[in-house]
Image 1 (cartoon, rainbow, N blue to C red):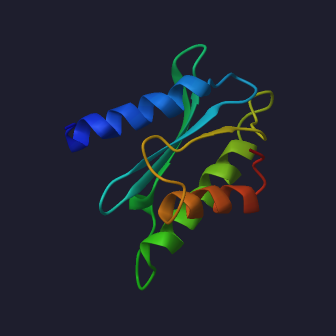
Image 2 (tube, rainbow, N blue to C red):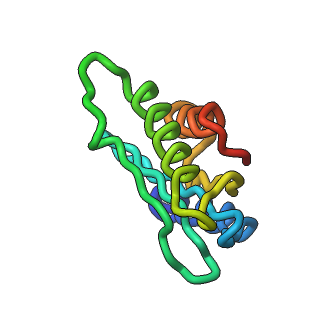
Length: 119
């Protein structure tokens, strides 16, 4: 029987094989921890991170984790559109990693779509 970590790595590899980010259409990679959520745009051709955003910068107050994830999605979309001339990003490839597309991961994707990113 496979251990939990091995199953997670298997799911991540299965998703990652199918997607590849470029300068025009980078990969929007999501990492979810227990308290925070992180999103970054990655150009796989040069193996460089273009932009990164996380939930640590957001004041929590009475917001739920799902609301914070939606806000992170909006933030990364706005920053991607406001990059210097010639580097702006409008289209991305969504990389959910080993996570199911629901809850915080889905909220982040919907927040990015609301702010104008196209998947």
